[in-house]
Length: 410
Length: 177
Image (tube, rainbow over all chains, first blue to last red; front, top):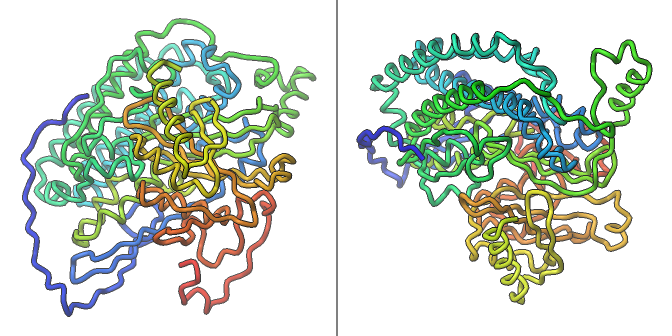
């Protein structure tokens, strides 16, 4: 695991607030708030500027994914899964596909090219999520240049992903057995043309944010999450790693072909907002490293493993071939049965361990389709960490936990 | 499963079967995790065994409604509580499970062992109506306070309408607030 560059922790001035005799004020931040991205309500009890207690209220983006999935044919739920963490939809879809393929028992049969393409889109999805997190954090802390530079990089990244998958929010690109489309022949060149630009953007943003006394004051030493809290609060991903706990599903329980890539997992030491920021910067560089290796390993080959029992018919034949036409509609309406059994399958989402717990009774719809949401656990720890901090600390702490509403509330 | 995983699983199996409080009733393998089923009364003791064995990484806590299963209804075991745990950096996940009858839908809270379970238990209460004894703050979490019913139960129709909120009920905190 790679340690982040060391810097001296900055001592924070703690103003002595007289506790006795001071009334608390109930302050409601959100769910509609100019700088708290997403719909989360934080009810604070403040004594002056100091937070005495915090109640983090989620659920404003709850759309009933699990209820809907129970009455939906398995393959149709890909459309819903992509809308969980809507900033990195392809990653969610990869996780869901892996869970269903595990249930089907075909994990080892996914062709290598399909696995590499899945790794490529997963890592680019991670970069997109991290850029979004850091860009909105920068904007909310007043370093708007960094926001614009980073969002431009993300716009270019999405152009690359659109060239692969088509739609942005609902790519419908990951399917059972592999992926729906192949990379164009000129895609690797477009990616390699983009990487120097995004690396420059990351460096410039890092310089701007790192040299900003305002950004440093509001992140260094703020909202420290001690390592002992990580396991108890179910924290994973960048939040856990920033606290020095080196967990990463790609290393601990490798899926796809992650165990064959050479990449580092950065680890912080203070668990403060700064570490959660710096770690994401470094993770993006590691993600680009993985994609470069994956592109070098791409060889011509099939992009999807098919079995007659559950594979969808090829889309270009469903309007001309009557039996494929019927099969397409039958699958969409009635679904195809999955083997009975239970599976828990996790991927390393941008915010941590994104798990799918699927229970099948052998029918075409799941008994249970549970999403293990890393954002939900991140939101839980926020209320624990805020007391003792100042009102101004809410914004960067909330922003750098990256609680994505769609993933938190499902 | 590789041998270290078998050892970890075996160790927990042994601890659970030796513990009088846990009341292990079954175990098995699923894809991605090993599971141990314990009795409703032995839920906290089993969780405490697992915590003591080093299963300190909370993964998930959720409920499965087996309303459509004849076997589950016959055995008065409609609901199944599932607690997924891991050891930091280790591959195997374990699941502790217990069956809950619909007429006694209460079980001990495991939030004293893993603080993050408090929110997961709130969600189980919100969506299934399971009550967790000793929970520090059992109220709804994803749905609004005035919501009526527990929608992830199989007998809650997906299209079921909720009562319109009166203006006065919105300004006052509801029972679930």
